[in-house]
Image (cartoon, rainbow, N blue to C red; front, side, top):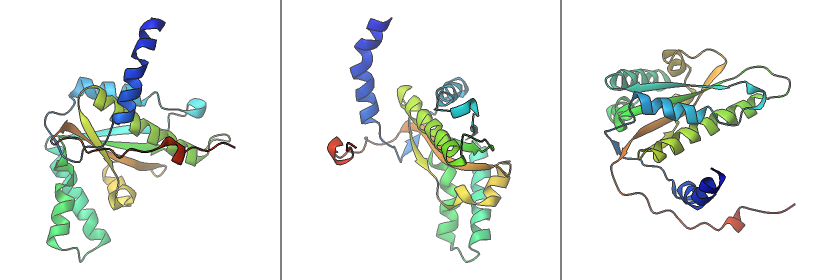
Length: 193
C-alpha cells in the first residue's frame, strides 16, 4: 500500500501544481453522490479542537434562478440606483455554473481556537472541494463579492448570526481551455528565518 502511494506522489504533486480556476462552466456538474464525495474531502480540512467550523449549501437546477432573484433583490437593497445591466448580472450570477456550493463558516467561541482560525479552516474546506471536483474531472471557481457579506443574502440562505459565507463555489464542466498559468518561482514566496 505504501509503495503504491509513493509511486503516485509525483502525480499528486503535478495535480496540485496545475489546478486553476475555470470561469466558464457548463453541464454536467457533480451529481448528488459526487457532491457527497466533495463534502467528504472538505471534512478533512484542518480543524483545531474538532469544532467543524463549516457547513455547505448546494444550489442547483431551478433553485439557481431563485437564488439569482435573491441576489438581485439584495443588490437593490444595497444600491437602489443599480442600473438594469448590473441587476441582470446579479440575477444571472448563479447560472454561470450548473452547481453552486456555498461554503459557510460556523463560528464558535473557543478558548484556543480564534474565529480567524475557524474562518481559515472553512477556507481550506472550500479549497478541498475545488481540488476534489478537479479530481473527478470537473472544474470550478471560487467567488465572493458583496453578496458574501450581505446580511440579507445570509438570511435568505438560512445562516445564523454566528455564520458567514466564505465562498460561492461555482462547479461544473470546463467550457474553455484551461488558462495558461504563469511560471512562479517558489523562491519569490519562500524565505528562511
